[in-house]
Image 1 (spheres, rainbow over the protein chains, first blue to last red):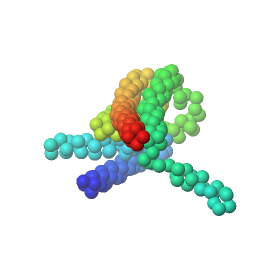
Image 2 (cartoon, helix red, strand yellow; image 1 turned 180 degrees about the vertical axis):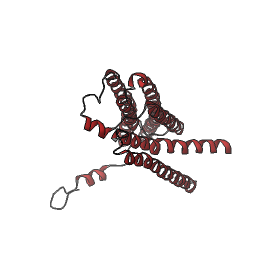
Image 3 (tube, rainbow over the protein chains, first blue to last red; image 1 turned 135 degrees about the horizontal axis):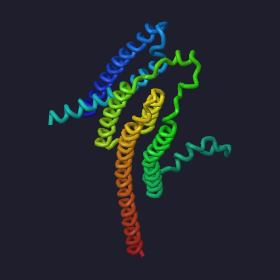
Image 4 (cartoon, rainbow over the protein chains, first blue to last red; image 1 turned 45 degrees about the horizontal axis):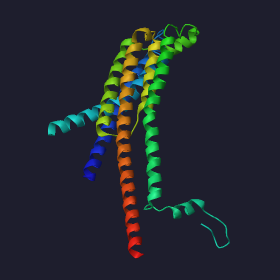
Length: 80
Length: 195
């Protein structure tokens, strides 16, 4: 039972890490946009970078664990 | 522990030596201390709600101020344009959905963990971004409703856990009391039979 629980936590950790990686890749988009917008007038700046950092935190700490939890609940419900 | 020279060299070790886990008096004191700790833990949720209420009042009171108005053009250029209210709305919706799933699952699991402090940080962040994009006047209610729902559920989750734990501890206390009464009664019977 303990082994099974540990295994489940391992999978959850892996999924969370994958989600964080995906969120990190998502952050690359605004960073590259910011780099390309330099010198082309007032475009995205520090505020947008801060906002995307904030979104990354929400995705990594709330959305990914929330979705993992939801999948676990649905899986348990489906298996009865 | 007192050495042969009469010097007390380790008071904590000495304390451990006097602690007997089977001593009913010490056990009762430990349980009562745990109950008091659980009561303190359950009040944490109320503090979270109160701090969020204060932050919300502050946010609503400064919603008409333009924060970027008095900045120099260089600083404004460095800061760039603020995120659009639509983007912040999407982020708030995603955050609320995920936070509700996590909080409700903790409520179902009867977990002791309290995540209200991190939620306070996220909600303050949303206030800040709405404020910077001049959209706080329209969207403040969305953050207030989401915040009170999430923090209220966090409080309820912690409160229900601590109430259950306190009830369990009180039951153990009652059992200990009955055991003590029984053992005191049997001691008296033995003495009566001996005399």
